[in-house]
Image 1: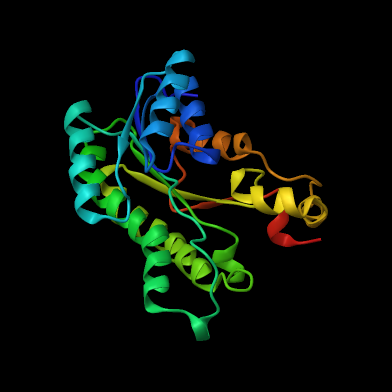
Image 2: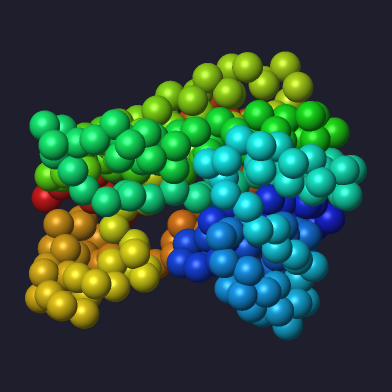
Amino acid sequence: MKLEGKTALVTGATGGIGFEIAQHLGKHGCTVVMNGLDQEAGDECVQKLREQGTKGEFYLFDVTDEDAVNENVKAIGDKYGQLDIVVNNAGGLGGRSRFEEMTTDFYRKVMALNLDSTFFVSRAAIPYLKKGSHPTIINFTSNAAWNAGGPGAGIYGTSKAGVHAITRALAKDLAEYGIRVNAVSPGTIDTPFHAQIKSTKPEVFASWAKNIMLGRLGQPSDVAAVVAFLASEDAGFITAETIQIGGGQALGI
């Protein structure tokens, strides 16, 4: 896999899938710039990467804050001279609310967390991706983009459907510069995201695997391996695609 010497920016990189991606990219030779909202966690992740032989650093900023994104991505791009890989991993459910009771603030918070962040980071990174080697953007959508999410998660599904659409739109817009844009859509992945239900209702958590064709929950490494492939030159003719990483979960059984 050809990633040696590339510079990667990974948002939401201090835990779960994000840090697994950082480790995978580092293992294949990338310098990894991580983003997050917890300085202590960021420092710990940098230390772990360095122990693994990866060059890495951490930038503390909120990906929903347009000015903070512009300032920090510019600082990163100026420092390294270019960006080769941008992984828009930051995002989340943001809570649950049915539409009748949903406040405008909640609506805007969830849309900002998932869709605005992808737009802000991608836009700020484009000038540096244009200078990159086989540059690429990898976004994160969800099964909820297709099935509209479970109870109270409708606006989450809506925001992730937006990520699916903006991935294809960015791919069209940036193809002339040789910048590829793809997305991944993880199924149920065993991460701290599910820690509460795993600890309080272990039988429910265990039952989720029964709805997955391959009979198990995904691991962060399952997602990170696909992201690393999409970031590599081995995927050099793949753009505007969304890869399902769910063990067949999207089809149901």
